[in-house]
Length: 321
Image (cartoon, rainbow, N blue to C red; front, side, top):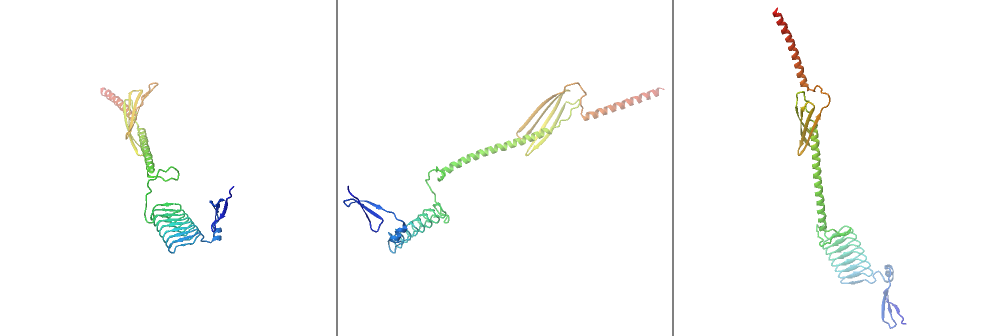
């Protein structure tokens, strides 16, 4: 049975596995902590710098380009005067810069200045933690946001070709907003229709109230013994509505009384009619106050006439003597 052999690679944390014939069949990597590696091999172990006055000052860091600089573990700087100063930061582009851990900047003069930030585009800047600046001259100045423009420079971009959002935290596009606006407009129209009907109902209620007040103000005159017909008018008001009413009473015979009344207020009209019968022994009909006055005057005239007739009779009797 062939026996495999394992041999460490000098200067690395890897081991080579070979078969009995000396052929490499596997490479095994062993992980070590950053502190162990630095202690064993130095703070700039595995770093590279390529370019005029390029420098690399971090563990496993890489600088490519004139005056490019890396200054932390795992940092990578690609471009003239580029700087990757944060741990595991990455920059690509002339004068690009990433100063904090896991920050990334792509494009000339792009800057990512906070942890986990990303600047993508020339002159873009990510100023807050976990912010993202997308596009040239974009500035992300709030944490945990994505910016596609700049409030400071009053520069805006549209995000186009966005699909409809389906989950709670998805973006909504204009088409979806228009659909919501249409539904809101329909609801507003329904509310307006209901409000119009309520206003009409309020007005009708006010007119009915005014009509009731006008009908209540009708006070027909009391019919006397010889009276047959009485007419009355009335007016009424309730809130913002006014009404006028008219009533009539007719007595065809002594024990029957007919009455009719109506009112109108705008387009609202009311009407009522009734009949009354009087039963029992025939009694002296009720007369109005004016009829009573007339009767008293007639009685007085009759008494005076009787007295004058008596005096005339006595004079005639005296003349015969």
